[in-house]
Length: 357
Image (cartoon, rainbow, N blue to C red; front, side, top):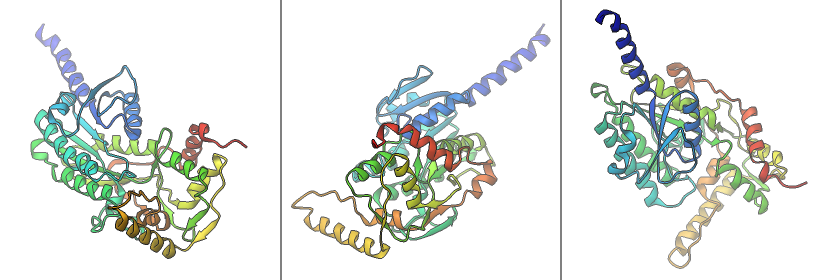
C-alpha cells in the first residue's frame, strides 16, 4: 500500500515546490510598471502579492499589503512564503524631493533586502535604470560594463546608483539569496502618468515648437510590456551558478530612434503639431545652466521649479541607447512588442487626450 502511495506523495511534493516557486511579491505594484507586471504574472500562473503605500487598482486574484517601504514590520507579511520579489517602487524621476528619493530608493531598498533574507525569499529582481551610467554625454550601444556615472544627471539617478550597488552586493548564493538588476530606459505605454500626459500638456501650452540639437540623436524608448518581459525572464533564469547572479541587464526595445522623431509620432498621433524649429544643443544647454544658476541664487527669496534644466536638455539632445546583448545571451531576451506596435497601442490608449480637429 505504501509503495502505491509513494508516486502520489512525490507528485504532491513536486506540485508544492512548483506552487512555491510561482508565488511572488511585487513591491510598488500599484504603480505604472507594477500594475503591468502584476497582470502579466497572473497571466503566467503566478500567485501575486502587492506591497505599496496605496492600493492603486482592484483585483480579486491579488493580495494587497499597504505600508511603508522603510518599515520591515510592514513589509514582512507580504513576503511570507514568497520565492521571488520584484522591487519596482520608486518616486517619479521628475520629482524634486531629494529626501523622498533617498528614503525610497536607498533606505527602503536596504529594508527590502533585510526583510527578504529574514523570511527566506530566494530571489530579488530590482528595477534599476540605464541612467546609472549616463552623465549627459553621448552613449551609443552602451554595455553594462560601463562604470557608474561619477556625476549623475539628477538626484533620482544618484539614488538609483546607490540602490543598485546594494542589491547586487547582496547576492549570496551560498545562503540561497540571489539578486539581479534590470535597467530599462524610457519606459512608455498605456496608463503611463508621465511621458504622454506631460508631452500633451507641454504641447497645449505652446512649448513644443523647438527641437534641441539637430534632431538626429538616437535614444531608447522601451514599451512597458517588454520591460515586464525582461523582469520575469530574469526572475525565472536567476538560479544558483547562473550568469545572472549579482549582475545588471539592459532591457530596451532594441530599436533606437531619434528622440524628436519619437515625440513627433506621439504628438501627430494625438493631433498636435510637431516641433519644427531647431536650437543648437550648446546654446540650449548653457541657457538651461544659466537659468538653473538663477533659480539657485533666488532660492532663498522665491521658489521656482524650472522645466528647462541642463538634465532635460541632455536627455533631449544627446545619444543614449544601450545594448541588450547580455540579456539576449544570458536569459533569451527578445522584445515581445515592436516599437511600431508599441507607439500605435500607446496612442490608441490615450485617445481621451487627442486634440479635436
